[in-house]
Length: 138
Image (cartoon, rainbow, N blue to C red; front, side, top):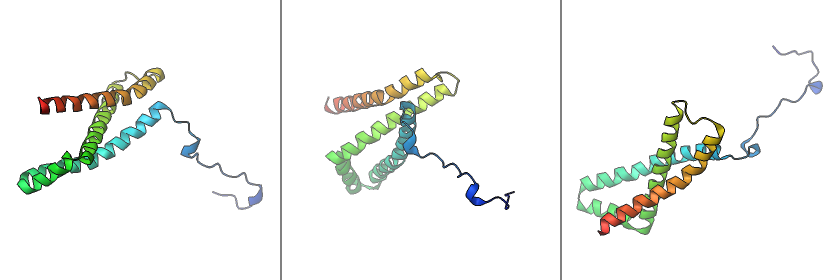
């Protein structure tokens, strides 16, 4: 219940909730945000995969349209980004799976993993694309 006899000018102002701008970004926080971002990117990227599959089932004209898009420089850039998001999200999920067992929860280890995750994501993505082009050309 509020006390109506108290003079409102003598009350202390209520504390404001902290805004995101006051927090210093730390690696684990950034990777948590990127995990959510890559999850959203995978949602939209999967729509493109579904388009490709529907085009393949619809006939040669539709499949050629989809293939032309994915074969263009922009389409390949989108596919590279999709692959990067997939690998990054997978590595984050594997980290969470290990942490669900109670291992790897100390601050130093989580910070090292947060710093290694984007590097590993890029390396694995480049290796996947290198292997795909090697199979395609060879």
